[in-house]
Image (cartoon, rainbow, N blue to C red; front, side, top):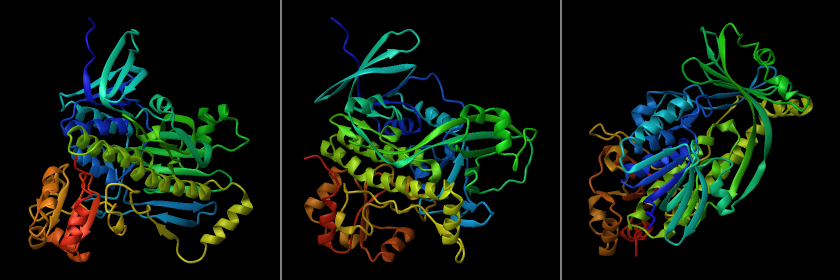
Length: 499
């Protein structure tokens, strides 16, 4: 009689930033997790270089805030879009001030260092099983979960496991997506760029901020990454010989106005095609997708990795609630409906910015420059973080479905240090005491933390929104605000609980 394979709450395919974050969040929730990854170790060269304040807050939820901050720098100087004549057309703002998530709004980092932090974080959880050099061969899904048929890369031996839920965080060529049969929708940008990473040998007078060189002769992006690391992204033009372009002499000629081979060490040069695609169908039964497996964006906003981390945060609390029988499986239907509109808005904005940057026709560039010439350069930020239809009160689109800020409380803690990964009901005692019995029971069944004496910071937020109470999800998005008992009872019904 053959031995039955082990059964996990969740299996994650892929141990990049999205998969590793999801595994940390589920591990912190006490879930048993299998992670399979075909590579032996962390890819040693730079890839993603930016994350935002909400993403740091997610790392905080995973218990890794300080470790991540230690390998990052705040992006206080912003991003400038500059034309061929050196005139600033557009600015994405940067600031050293703390943003709404209790940290700076933007950070830069070296991806191998971040992945090391995330993998070290998994060692805290004995119930998280990481299997490297393991490839997914096939999936047999059924009503109760799925069996994963895997192969050890080194010796070809077979390995099998079962999980109640499977999440494909397995990249742009996702085998899990192929099994689901999800189709990818092209949102209009497919352009090759040369990515050129260097480590400075000496101090050089380079901008501290990111520069989008919107020069029709050769569009480029310059990034001050972290420490001595610098990056140039260089648009590949139709007449370029790609093989010649990546040769050292050609590379250094392209960046000669800023740096020479004597001043820096070449770390990586590779040509990538920037895509803008999004999947239709992020879930099929017990199988789900996250990160590049279900969306890919050009890097002009620095939101590719961020989008995957947001997926992990949205999915983690829902999987935890479903596995613990605190919520019905239908809660997972809100994953794609909530995340997809926000991801699509970011991709579409990145494509529009790409249109500004990638203009190579001189006449079109002159027309573009003329449009921006009037007055001071426009300063823009990311679109509001608003979820699509899902587990919140859709009648309150002004607040519901948006992240709640993270102030520092009177006792010195950040809000999320108090709340943990629980839902929360924050409000004035007089109103909360009048909640219907069914409402109070729903709070208890969802294991929500009830705060009926909000401190000065939380009280100030309630007053600023003329509210008596606010309900938060475990991922810190607002379920709804209440000004009356009837409203409190209504929005509380959006807290998912098992029947």
